[in-house]
Image (cartoon, rainbow, N blue to C red; front, side, top):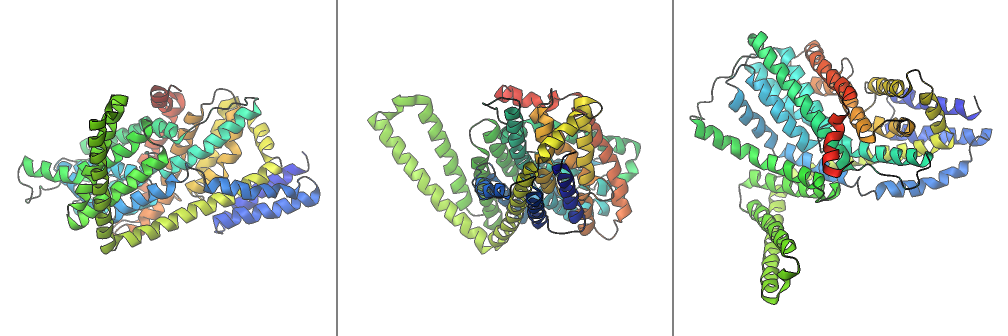
Length: 524
């Protein structure tokens, strides 16, 4: 073992130990890295001048177009949460399926899936579900363990359901690692992994998890109907027409927003950042409509749809659309529609601001975004020093010589990430662990980067709900009613942990589940 290896190992253990003691993540990463850079320079195994590359790396992080989608997606999720759209979704679906045995749990899973796709943040989804769904399930006689487990498991779907924030960050790190691995193999025109690739790869595994959750609820309803009794019908919703009307009012707009955001990314019509901006815009219009029931949001939404239709017609006709009469009419229509969009948007933003929601959403978005980027800057310095000390070569050599070859290396990494999930946030693992192990793994033969990214995302999702230290369980403990004990939450989570573990094993043996959609869409 050379002189640098002990420093690399000590640096990793020092970071983990300090995080366990509760020190701030970003400061721990940056401070520890600086100390070991000085030690490396003093012992002659690293040149401190390497830190001169740090400003340029930080500039690259802050101008990374993919990462610019983070604050916009966070804004969209927080706006939908504060506008009480989530509550309407939960109440409506509960009334729709509640008359069935286990129907309230089924509706919680369906709505939780929609919220996971709309919010993309586990903590926000857990709090919303815990405050709204959990009391309703208890009130109608559900077993506390089943209710708590259902809410906790459904909330963790925000880790794997596009457009999850975790997937955006993971795609960026996997892409860097994949290109580094190709360069190390002598490929000087490396391929890349985009956010759209990971979004597409997550669709089937996430859908599989939802189906397994629903199947579990059906089995419980058949074997233990007393644990999930039906809900009495709402006297205010008499007749099928009233139920369908309420369902359409609550579901159509959020579902349409999710489809537009994801469809534009997967279809190659927009970059993740552009799609996130569309999502933030749509969330503002939805909140304005819910706040004042005014026409400004409808005007802006309708005019936007007409502008897109006009653009499609112009592209379809090509140069023929630019004859003078047609061009004059189209130009005038576009100007009027853009004016309508501007007018409706200003009115909608003003309505949201008057309600006080906009200030809260902006503050929360700024807080979450600052936390993510501060950790990322600290992780950038950690990665720079780690590589300067030769840590990437050490990890690559260690993984390549593990028993079991490529499979053994992946299993070891997955177990380590799973255990770290007890004490580290997903963002911390993505910024600290993935840059260390992913380049080495992707140099091994037969590993698809998209499959590896989805495996990591599902693994992190499972660690989020695993007793006793799963972060989702701690979030739920903080908002659960007094009737729900910690033991109820732990026992209720165990069946869902086994379901997630089964899905991860299935993905291991059938990697096509993660690569099927990207191959169909992008020919990968």
